[in-house]
Image (spheres, rainbow, N blue to C red):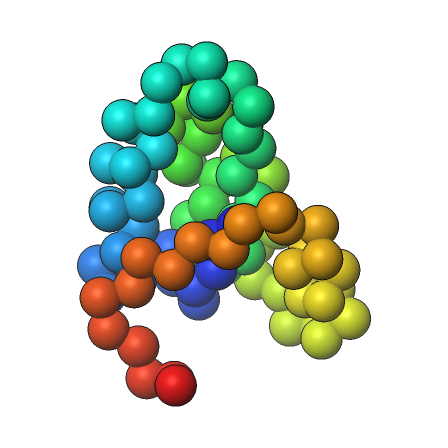
Length: 84
C-alpha cells in the first residue's frame, strides 16, 4: 500500500518505490498487488509491471480504514512530509 495526496510528487518517493518494485524477482512480482490511495496510482501498473488497485483520493475515514486493513504491508518511501 502506497498513500499520498499526489503519488507522483517527488517528495513522496514514488520513484524510489518504482525502482524497488522493478528490482524484485519476477517470481515475487507475481505475488504482489499494489494498493494506492491518492492521485496518479493508475499509471504505476505499466511502470512496475504488477497489478495496481488505485482507489484515487479517499476522503472518508471509514474507507481509509478498510483500505489500510486490506494491506499486508504499508510502504513509506517519503523524502519529506508535513506531518509527523
